[in-house]
Length: 395
Length: 160
Image (tube, rainbow over all chains, first blue to last red; front, side, top):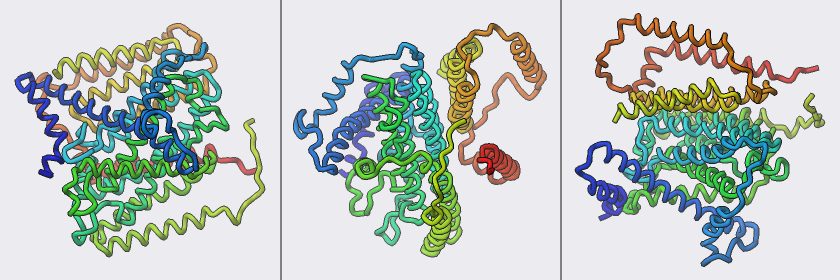
């Protein structure tokens, strides 16, 4: 019974495919892919609509005010109203803009975000695009985001757009390094770049109680935090929304976009956030595995989305809590702290592996991480050597 | 189906490459170059060499393309002017093409009937890199580190 419930979507797909059982092989292949794409889009566009209203509700709650509460019960139909508003808004393209590139930029951005969603396993046997180098695919496709942002900034022919795009690219390149290197220890320990294998490696329980998720090892916990913060930067969200800092450069690369194109940027940002949180769940939080053996009767996809929602809540929570960072501080943290720490995670994972993956390895890798962390935070401590601030202007 | 896919990808790649060579606006040409590279990557996917295809996307579209567009942005103010056909470029392109063709035609290793090759998994590539090719890998790593440090030295603030 529980396994039938667990595999309900897989069986539904099999049932749909049985309708065209006699067709040639390539028809079945294409239909199967189309069903996967349709399912993925349906789930994540719904989640986008839901999150956009929930985020405003939660932000309202944290800032001691009501969120949206006019449209439908508890304001739940707000995304519908927003969508209609965005669709009937005038689409303004600047006269000096590059029309084609200006139109293509949000499309490319959204397409990249949707593609990266494909490789994540959402449940037992539920990966839309099963590929041997899934993690590599995620980052390879994700690296096209920078180009899309540049297209948006350049095609708008506006100084604020260009400045925003420059900032976005600088921050994305800087944080892509710790993001990818924080993934390395997991790939090393599992010995595979395939997300399904990585999830399968976290399926057992130590002493029968503690699940073997990588976040419960010292290197995994450190890498998870690095990955999470870098993911926050990659999705351009507060406190790292420097590229679109409203008080400084209007809206960055999105300044010259209006109507549905602006909504597409918004959509791409949220889909990117889902993708990076989904990958964090897959890599460090055990993917679709239940947190205890007795809870395994709950379908695996429910566990995945529960973990995903928790991470998304933390994203919203941080947005409500923290002010925007300064550009130079952000870069300093990326290159002087996050990068060495992510390399330390790789070494600590190797130590954990060679000390026998048990309690001894756990303690040794904790030791390695603590030493580097202490050394780095002592070195980077700016409180004592606060010099007079000198401004250098561009010559 | 593979044949059809091959034709579609070839037409796409060639059209994008032609546009990259012919478009008057340099930035448009750079974006078309990205499309051509995407076509090349899909060729590798079609051949089952997904690692090479992904590496191509990662390095060329993720990094080199951004480098190219930034170079155009920061160096050329007259990127919108049309300069006419650059004949020396045509000559060099033709020389490179004929050299490559000569090399391909002289090679006896290529047989007309494709041998049955099993596609390498990412894991096999990783193991090969870490065992038999570990010294070349280390040399490349050293070279890249040197390049990184060199770049840092170049942009370092001069102390007065």
